[in-house]
Length: 128
Image (cartoon, rainbow, N blue to C red; front, side, top):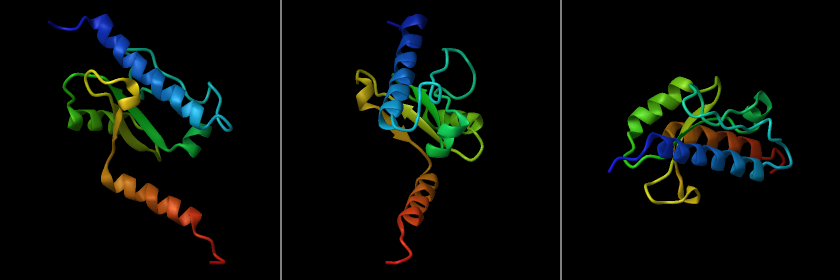
């Protein structure tokens, strides 16, 4: 039996709101509700919009997918097409029959390495 459109949209909205809420919780000392939002279902663009200030802290463009069968290459293309300048596209996807806390993140491996390089450079002390 096929899922109703309203139910599918609710699943997607719940995942977006979970991502927004978790980001705000992790960065509660730096970000406010206006810095991280969730788009309305059917709106084009990024699913979890970040303010310019938030993008300096979290250089990600987040696409959310809560579907039974995920077209991961297509989702990554969509995330890349919608991404903010100077951010890394990521797809947050929730496996079927798993709660939002069990969501997975997919990104390009080279992007992950670039983030790791930047973190390493920021943590390297000159007096070591």
